[in-house]
Length: 263
Ligand code: 13P
Image (cartoon, rainbow, N blue to C red):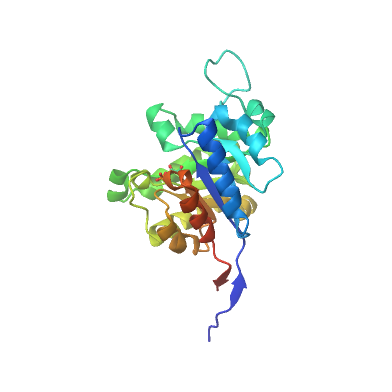
């Protein structure tokens, strides 16, 4: 006979990806509204990933608060003659704790290979930054039924180059490319299936690491679909683009993190 019980769920991570949006004034207003709205929320841990020039502003606005901040990319090199690149130590200098790696808007536009992304992932780790590795398939790949092969290859590149233990205490964000900025989020069934596949792939390489990696969902997350998505135990949080630019919507997404889960 099976029985169900209610347990308090662990907090979930909600990451804002501002992409190339913002100004000093708008950022200040947005962060003030975030902090105000987050006062009553204890279930969500929040990280804001901002364009590089605004990292200094985040140290001013967010130091001493519960909100952490980070960047949206990092160089695979430590330093040197790499015009336009920004190194991991530079992010650390401005208090960043997290960095998004391999977002499809970058990997497509700048032809980043999985190897390049793997090197950035390790560079972030070497400097004590938590990488948020984005993985996901195109619509064509989903329709062809090869989404697990595509996501598997993205993970396997890191495993092949650096071992499964590289995933310990990191973050993977499942971001189906067809769901980003389209208003069409993955269903919770689609997301859960891929999250299980991601954890299983990491576990096959390193069981301990698989127990500590957080797996987020990203792609058209809004206050409505967040309720369903964040209620899944396989989904450790959300990576939010458009709705993170509106404090009211972002706070509602944070509020969607459940207090309790039924097991
Ligand atoms: P949207 O929430 O705007 O779809 O963006 C998702 C995303 O790319 C987060 O990194």
